Length: 248
Image 1 (cartoon, helix red, strand yellow):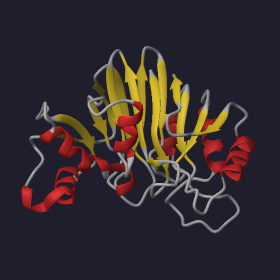
Image 2: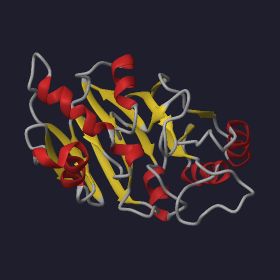
Image 3: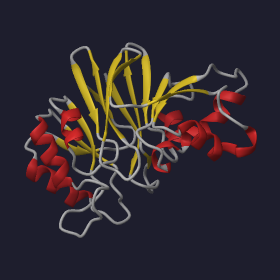
């Protein structure tokens, strides 16, 4: 598997990155994990407008799904289009939410997307075995585990500490984990992780490498987040950057 970070900013686009979007490729198949605000630009920069065979949306907050609305124009109106409907695996309500965000007057997006509702469990997408489970966030949100050819990539989505996250990350070769909050401050409960918490989950799950994402740089600190993660996880740790690629 190859992971390309298209966007990794938390909650809203930052000065150097779009919001969450991660392209995972294997055997010529290209799976997009989340499609957050601004990431369509990065898709063109690092892959290409057509470089998507399926989409998984972890949840329906704008910073994880909004450019799936913008992408409607590409797939419906491209000069060499329209393109065939694209499979989208998402929480309940996704068809209505995306349709309303794109244009309430123009009706459903059935010509652009074929929607599949997520539920906890495992299923195939292309060459991947995909496992999802509900994680600890205020809306219906799924963490994701991808397996291919004996290798494992785990993605936290947005979550606070929970047992489901630990199960999804168990033994992962690469753990792409959010770390939105700073340690040592009064953070809202049941919303996001800190760097220290991300490191603790990585240690308990026995992952090979920890990649921190979804940092809110406007009021956070990359240095503190990285140091706190390294204090609780002894393996390789780094912060995700747009355009970075990882062989899993």
